[in-house]
Image (cartoon, rainbow, N blue to C red; front, side, top):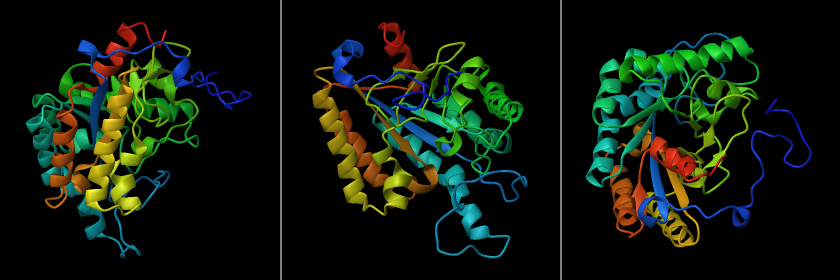
Length: 305
């Protein structure tokens, strides 16, 4: 099984691969940096199932209010009602396609929004059932398989095809998740922040490629958890892109920037995202693409087996 413990990395979900030992990776037209922007549309339930597992409170603050805690719950919904449109507009204005992770309850409760993202040309990828129902090893294999199927079915209803990509809620997985995703027809996942290039996952059936997210620039990690200032965050994103772009002259790099509309879509934050994207897209060798475009190109060049 891919999740068996082994000497060294202590697992064999993927092979250890030091970057200097890999074949040279070239993006289309010799571009040095592939830019992918993932946007998370997550539903927070007011009354999750009793056995559901959640990593954190629905929003910030010190103490939760007595139920129903309208402030916390509706704060996240702001992204579905307002913030998402600012984010999509900022991306479109700079020629950056969106890769939108949509969980099943968002697709089911907000069908207009899900269709809107699809009709605007965003790639929709699986994102579990809800932000309040994480995938963990506490689940049975049957329950996890059902979770994946429900997530993919909800988006298949909108797009007419099986989503090619997957981003687990909170990037939480069980030891079985990669194998079950590949079995379900998913071709890439965004849960592993351990590289600057895509890389192949080890699965018993199908093909699965990891598209590593740049965790340090993740908007919640940087702005919400670490309380980084907006100018600092914007500079971090641009500085990282410039260095990856320069390093990409030797072998191509990827920057996957992860965003949440309830956070970066706020009126006082969206400008920092817009400024960062403008500077990144002004670099001469940047290829802005969806997750599928990047991972499909990677495999078409003979990488990943």
